[in-house]
Length: 431
Image 1 (tube, helix red, strand yellow):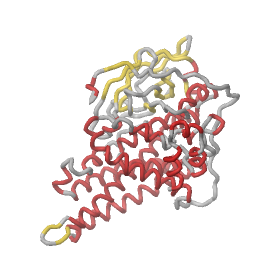
Image 2: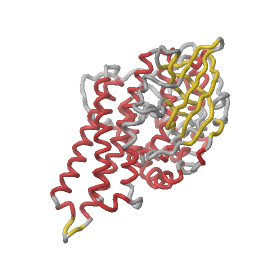
Image 3: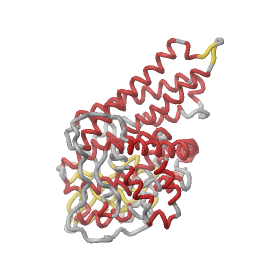
Image 4: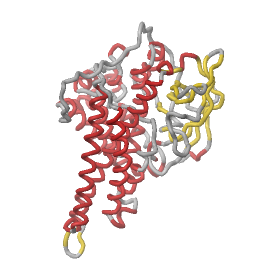
């Protein structure tokens, strides 16, 4: 995503914004099945084709290494966080309960989210975007701010940028020319990073989906699970075991023969409209292999995805904390606020402590990633904390509300269900 004040300023003055009638809203930002469960053919709304010839792939430069570890947001980052937080509060939070019940985002919400330019600003200028350098920290802050509104809808909003980010980082010149122009246009395609499979103790490095070489390219067979916005997606990045040699990533268009979608409602993330992606003898050209099939590329995708889930967990955990503090201060029992009870006060304090630890570890991993430093250890710690402490915070939130924590009148029960997904999910988001 690489959001920045300079990028937003450039976005506010772009002709695309002028034609869409969005100049004033963007300038204001700168200044301030149930789909029925049946299988259907994948969305086939467009044909991807090259808009220009590229001599070499375009990449975003790594961030400067200042030699300091300082998590104080810059003025640009603070503006971005405030903007996205306002959007999440005004657009995502009010729509979350309805999206959870209907298993899809309300009509128009995701197009309004696209107006933020989340995909546009993560694409280099030479490819029509406004990105100048990679900023994993800013991406993490954006994911956290969106998840403060709703985790499921945040995943739906961020899913296309996972694909465009992967194309910028690992796509060759032809792949970038074919697909990235669609992500900088007025109608950003729904897209998804599909790593998850419905297997006990799923290991993303050992996918059951198989890819084999053919005279014309590759053939994929398998099923991907919990793919966000699967029924609407026009482009997927899919992981598959390449002839027993290990996992690799492939670009799969929904219009490919053999691609079908089945809805897959889950306990949480229901606003993300998750589904199964069925691949049955899907024929792909040789150019569909992303990143040259290199093991280090796949490893980095998994790490950056896990980091994204840690940031999302921090955002939703913060929503829990911000909700329970006024609740326990206002809720009275035996003539006084329940927060006067030591057990309640300690439980709220534990939420705040664990949340701060999770955020610090996740942002440290993001800071090292964007500077090109080793960050595997930090991602592993962030993943562990997000899984354990995120679920713990969700459970504590439900407990602190007592009977109110069990009913849908209050959003904490939904946040608890969503936070349980953190330890399960692979892919879908990418910082």
